[in-house]
Length: 140
Ligand SMILES: [Zn+2]
Image (cartoon, rainbow, N blue to C red):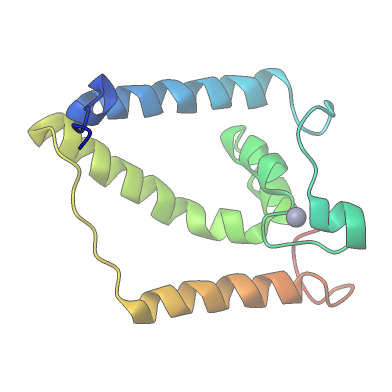
């Protein structure tokens, strides 16, 4: 039986957090230096390319670029769900970062099946709503 090999990354949550912080910083720099509105090398959505429909993730890259530049209205126009979820994502990241920096461990998070169902339903409603027509929904 092969012995399980641990990598440097798997050993320390602080190393994992540092790698994620570096990746996040690189992503922020990429979006700031090469705005998705002006550069076309960002991947496009296959659903939108094939069917002309917008999935719940369409506009996410443009929304993130707008959020990082402080353009809330433009971000909501690209993906309102991303803007709505951003406070929770930032709060979660700060909570985990604090836990890792203070105790060198990730905080365990348990999400009940009811909340998972609510999240799926919210994403589905958003995905359907943004394709239903003019003026019905925010988010192009
Ligand atoms: Zn899409």
